[in-house]
Image 1 (tube, rainbow, N blue to C red):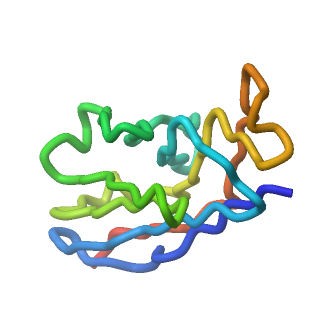
Image 2: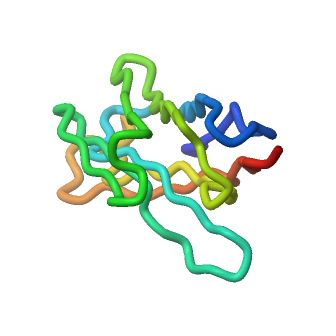
Image 3: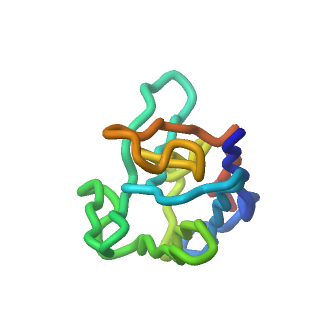
Length: 125
């Protein structure tokens, strides 16, 4: 069974920095895209950033220039470095793994998608 476990959330002051990590486990063969989404109270879940296995990245306009996504394919881990955070960055941040193939499904045409349980980031003074 594939699991995604996020860590690194917490309380940070405006202008500060925080680093989120998400480790995928469970006999993983490959993962196409890993990403971070967030959901603020009363709002829909939105994409923050994602990164392909080849290293191509995509960011939401609201975080461009402030957040950096990176990935360690050998560890099946994705990171989100959050700099110059703002109160509007407050949300539950969810890790997503798209197109996951395990050792048992490595020849499948399509992989499965998985979500972590989320980690809360609060930006406040």
